[in-house]
Amino acid sequence: MDVAPGFTAGCTEDVFPTIGRSWSCLIEKEIWLAERRWRDEQQRAASERKRAEAAAVAEREAAIAAAQEREKAQREFRERSDRDARRHQREREIADLRLRAARQEAWQRSTETAARNAVVQRQRQVVIDVLDRIVNLPPAPEPVTEVVYVSEE
Image (cartoon, rainbow, N blue to C red):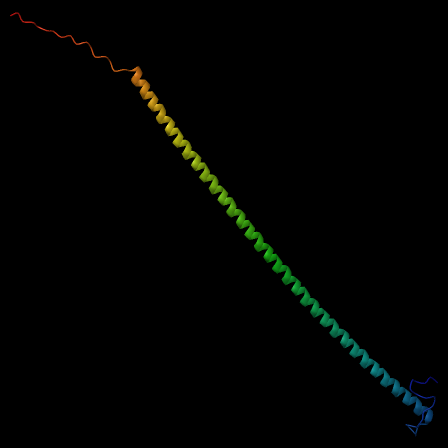
């Protein structure tokens, strides 16, 4: 007969004296085995609970880590978007300033050209007037014939 650990080859006392020593040992062994199975089941259940709790903790930690990563990614995306928006705004402002400078430059060139043209036109007109006076001298006065009457006296 197989003896459960902790049991000696024979029972030391008769727990159930009315059924005999060998039966008493057998019942003791069955009780011990049932208690052992119950303890093992309790330990297995406790171990399973611990594993489930550890898995739940790990899942919560993973969810927290994922949320933190999402928040970090969103923050970085917002920062990058803000940086890009500021850069685009600066580029638009610089392009606008360049356009204004080009317009100002064109206006200035146009004004300077108009002023030069006006000066040249005035100089031409002066030259034309001088030449006109030289070429078109006023007509010489017609010789005046004077009739002089001399009286005889």
